[in-house]
Image (tube, rainbow, N blue to C red; front, side, top):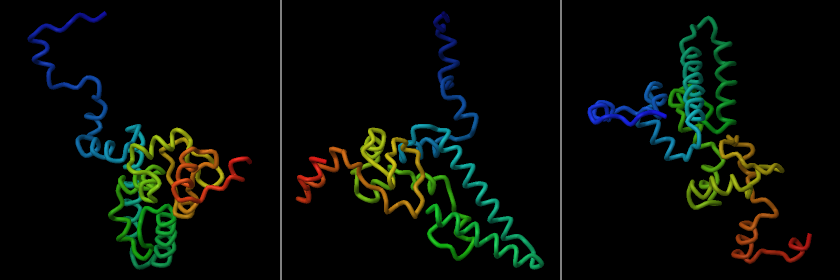
Length: 187
């Protein structure tokens, strides 16, 4: 057991956060906390990883941009591959120039998470409900039921986000739209 702190010790340690010291040491600060709350990230490590990926993509784009005219063919080929990959993941809006990669941030990765796309597709009212739906297994991407809210959905799979067939939410939506079929209930 640890003894209770004396009054003068409490006054000295009042402004220290002994529980979340890793976040302060990593330099995350207020912007990181805002992003964690805004995108309903369950783990801080996910956001740190997104920041590292965005930083690596920006650095690669900067290196490609700074290549000399002697390697123009290599630069064009690598730039096209990088932009195609980022566009396919849905992180940049156009695949024409490397300038789109310069503005890449961790928030772009957060916007491609499954709960954010559920809100965007109007399958959930807000992120809190979207995270709950995913964790409870009401959503599938393609043929697979997804229970991890940290799933990054690429552009190609965005059209395949649907409710699970046995989901009560799907039944309520079909009832509301008057599209429910009694044959589906028996099967």
